[in-house]
Amino acid sequence: MKKNTSLPAWIYSLLILVVVLSLWEGLSRYKIINPLFLSSPTEILAAGYDLMKSGEFFTHLRQSAYIYVVGVVAGCLAGALLGLAMGWWRRFGDIVDPYVVFFSAMPRVALYPVFIMLMGVGSLSRILIVLIGVMFPMLFNAYVGAKQTSKQLLEVAQVFGYRRHEIFYKVVLPSAMPYLMAGFRNGVTLGMILVVVSEFFGASGGLGQQIAVTAQFFQTSFMYAWVIYTSLLALAFVKLTDWLERRLLWWS
Image (tube, rainbow, N blue to C red; front, side, top):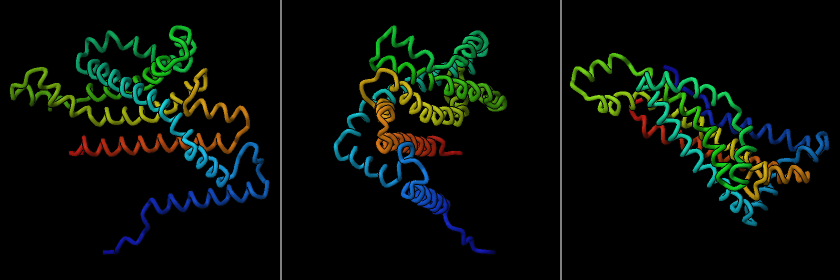
């Protein structure tokens, strides 16, 4: 039997990153690309260090993190509860399904001016944008997960005398967990995008607001530093979700 001598996947990922950054740095140093629109990696790194050293990064991170955590958690909970209810109580699902489809097709960001008119430019309007945007992917995953529970498992539970609420908690909910985690994973990444977009309009701080301000004043290095920080935060949340999924879905 041949021994597997291939390198781990993360090494290939790192090599690709090194090649891309080296090429990017060379193009920037020799002025092949316009630094006004695309700064070099070293300049972006220096800008990111300045933001971290001055504490400006943490100041704006706190504002965005509050919007993000509250919006994502509330949106995932609302979507999971409604989706599970639609999948478990079929009659209820049939009744509310047209409304869910109608509102899910509505562009969530387009509602932000309405929220601003109703609630001002404070945190609540941005939380609602994140909540609504995250809720629907979670809802559809929860609905499909509950609806596709194996009929054989449901019949076995009934044979063993499980009551209706016991069937839900012991059969339907575990069966729907992979779908719930998939919805949560989508919500984690989508939530970060919606936080940034919501902060483009009238916010006094936050990661998105800083991206907009630095882009407006052509502070390219700092703009890319904020973008990279935002992407790294999203990546960290996704990895945390993957870890949580392994702990919760230990049987898969």
